[in-house]
Length: 150
Image (cartoon, rainbow, N blue to C red):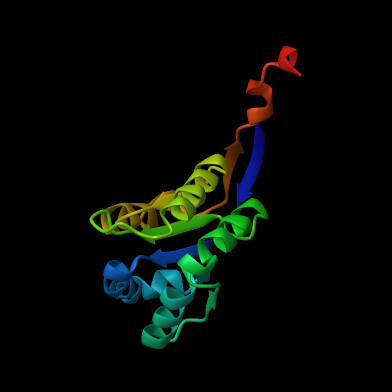
């Protein structure tokens, strides 16, 4: 296993499917004092809505279906994103579902905290770990591959 350090100041990706954008903007407003201490980014429309309604500087990537999910995933791999709030809609099929699955896989692989609904986001924000550095673990999946097969 390799260690990954999540600093005291988190780099938080904010993402929401269309039917959850209003809910995420409302949640960000409710937690604005806390979130203002961290770096925020998000997929295009969501980031722009949060900035418009809160005044927070949120780095906007492309819209999710246009590659934004993949940009956030690359940010996780590069250590530029280490926390994710993703309010996703479990009742509506998304044309970019494979991208969403890939993003969630990368988040798990790189051992970053992920909230996919308001309750989990509330629990994560109130965790004592939010106020300090955290040492996570990246599993070395190469060690799971039998060497005899190559």
